[in-house]
Image (cartoon, helix red, strand yellow):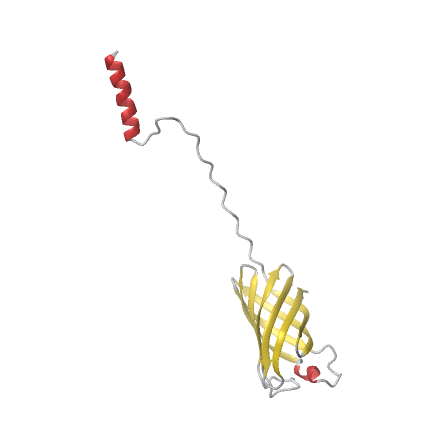
Length: 163
C-alpha cells in the first residue's frame, strides 16, 4: 500500500514539475482576429462641386492610387464661365492632385501653377489643402487655401462621386 501511495505521489510531483496541470482545465477560447477594413481604392475619374468663400466650383479629378499614395490631376471650372464674375475666371484651372489615404481619411492637396496654357488668369496660382472622408464611390471633405490674385478660400467644402 505504501509503495502504491509513493508511486502516486511521485507521479503527481513529476506531472507538476513538468508543467502538466494537476487537474484538467477547460481551454480558454482564442478570440478571432479583428479584420481590418479593406482600403478604399480611389483610382478613377471623379466629378462634383466645391463651395467656399469665393463661390461654387465644378471639380473633376483623374486620380491613381498606389498603396496609400494618391496622385493625379484636378480641373476646376465656374458653373457659368461667361457670367463676368471673378469666380468665372479664377475657377477655370488645371492642376495637380496629391494625397495620402489612411483609415478612410484622404489628406489632400490641390495645386494650380501660374502660367498654365489655356488658363484665363495665367499670372495667378492657387493651392488648397484639406481632408475628405473616403468611401467607395464618394469623397466628402473640407479644405482651405488661397489664390495669389484673389486671396483666401475659407470654409471650403467638397462633394465628389466616381464617374
